[in-house]
Every structure is written in C-alpha cells, then in structure tokens.
Amino acid sequence: MLPEKIQNRVDPTLSFHLMKFAFQDYQKSSNELSEEEYMQTYQLANEEMILHQLILSSPQACCVVIPEATFHVTLSSVITEYPDETTFHDFLRQNDLNYDDYLTALRNDLRVEAILTHVSATIQDVSPLEIFRYYQIHQDQFIQPEQRHAGHIMIRFDASSREEALKQILKIRHRLKNKPENFAHQANLYSHCNSSQNGGDIGIISAGELCEELDQQLSQLDVDTISPVIITSSGFHLLTCRRIIPEKNIRFAKASSEISSLLLKEKQMQVCRSWLQSLVRSP
Image: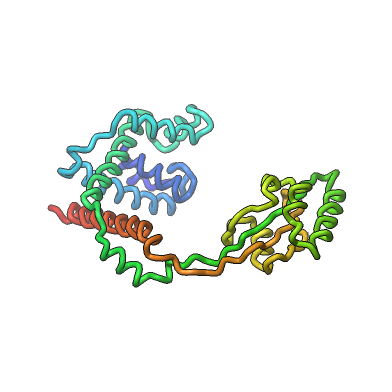
C-alpha cells in the first residue's frame, strides 16, 4: 500500500513524471511499484516536475512552440509502442492519468526539450584551436584497431541436411587447405552467403563486427590461411584472412569532424547546465 499522504498529493503532471520513471526504471506502472520503489520514483518525478515548471515559466519559453505536426507524430510513435490504443489507454489509467491530461503533459515535455535545444543553440561553433588541442591531449582515443580483409563460405543446413552439409564443408576445407588461393572459386560454386557472388569477399572487418564464433576465429588467422569449420545457428562456415591491416593512428584531418561534434555537444550541454542552475538559484 502506498503512503496515503503522497497519494493525495499526486496531480496529473506529477502522475505523468511518475509514469515515465516507473516504466524507465522498473518497467511497471506507478501503481504497481512497491512502497520503496514508489518513494524513490516519487522523489525523482517530483524533482523533474519542479525543474520543468521552472523551465516552462522562464523567459526563454515564451518563443518556443511545438508544431502540431511534430506533436502528433510524437503521440503516434508513443501509441504504436503498445499492442493497440485500448492497451495504451489502460496503461494511462493504471498510472492515474486520463487522456487529456496526458496530452497536456506530453506537450509540455516536448516544449521543455525544445527550450533546452533553443538554449543550447546559442553555442554554434568550436574553434580550430580547441579541436587541435583536444586531438593532441586525447590521441589515444583516435586509434584505428587492427582490421582484417576476410573471405567467407557458408553452407546452410536444417535438421535433415546437417550431416550432408558437414560433409560438404569438410570437402571444401580439404580442397582449400593447401590451395587457399582457390577460396574465391569455391565460394562462387558452393557458398550460400550473399558474398558468394563476389568470391566470398566480405570486406574489411573490425573486431566485433561478426558474430562471436566467426569473430574469434578470424582474429586468430594468419594471411592466406583457412579457419577450422565453424558452426553457428545459421550454418557451417569457413573464413580466410586475405590481408591484415595493422593498428594505426587516425590522422587529425580525419578526426577533426568527430572532435568538433563532440566538443560542440559538450559546450552546449554546459550552457544548458549553467542556465538550469541559474533558474534554480533565482528567487
């Protein structure tokens, strides 16, 4: 049972924020929370509600309007997350919200986001010197890990064809063991992978781009060697490594765009934080 005093204080706006945090943190409606969960969620929701009220009553809010088209697109995207509209309305009721109050709260939530975007937009530029200094200080962040140019052969199977598929992949591997240069030909003839049309070439691969089983085997291959037969849920596989591209530093010219975006976002977030702090401090 939730504390009666808190229950009596809940208004529609607070219910909206309670619903957000209850689902975000516990995947529950607010009325399904335990007393401890509710108390924690209530504190977060109440703090967010008060902060949003300050933002919506700020001078910067007067010029921010949410276009109706934007609002309805957002509302539609929320509703489509539920099996149907009835389920959506049931969920609102479970969170002590009626539909009209939800629409008002959602519109205000979108306005808060837009106001923060408007405030952050006062920062538009990052200087070239700032970008270069960041690159010099954080060069360890701009390293391209080792990559491998890989070839792939796959033989699919189901319950009835597994044994035959295994025989086929073993025969292919036997042919390639001493003649890895024939990999493309064997891929063209037998592979069920889409890459067969390109001789099994799957391009330049970084660690983690393939499924775990393939990734592990590829990382251990020397150039022009053939992997053992690899079994996954999709079939039997063979890999070859055609070329190893060593780890290397990413040059400043290539990294500068990424750094610029990163620094701009950080500066905009700092502007928002400072602005919010000024709102909170204001009498």
